[in-house]
Image (cartoon, rainbow, N blue to C red; front, side, top):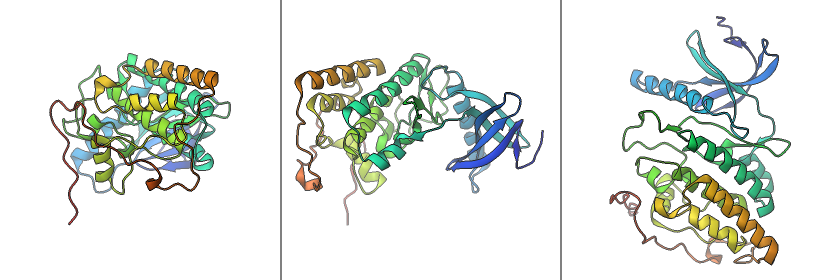
Length: 317
């Protein structure tokens, strides 16, 4: 295989389009005459051999997780391979913009705009969960919105395959802090309901333009996720606020039991708002500050951690 920087396996590299933990290129498959997205594994420069090996295992786990799923709302994986030590995944090239980019422009969305997006995410998750895949990293950056309004769920890099032995050691934490579930924060075993919690976070953010669990550090954010209830979403009609509350329950058993159950609740909420012309639970105040709304309340309900409480927030000296 060619080692040219302009090719990767059989694919031609057109340009680099993103770089974080990995590099993503726009590419071209001459055999199929189609554009592709090429995701190349990027090893940490200071990583140990063990860390590199684990990173490689997770990269191929991502390809297996997403590649095992064929659904219109999940990015399609075409190929996975290695070229002269460069490991890559070839996948469907997606136009449009992700939800983060949309929120950066719009600030927040109306329920009529948000529900179709979230329902497609939930449809994708319901399919993934039925096939033994828990995404574990639902966030606006991983929700791609195409020009025709279709949604594609992307980045299964830390997905949990329930039909295989976990490669995560008990106590290891993977995910994006603001969107983690309480059980994810403390490194416990996860099931589909962790994705439900993350969907509740994303829905709150779509409807308000703010995250439900705020903080100026990872410690304060994760403390809030485990210990406090979010401020009631300002300007959001009560039927949708109720959906958010249920999705964000600390205890697993109190959340929606499935993605389809949450999707049905969203349909019912939208119908209720349309029928009743429901008013928001609180008026939206354009110049509101955090003090304009009731402070978050401490959570005193059942613990989802199997009797293990998360560590308290360190006191400031």
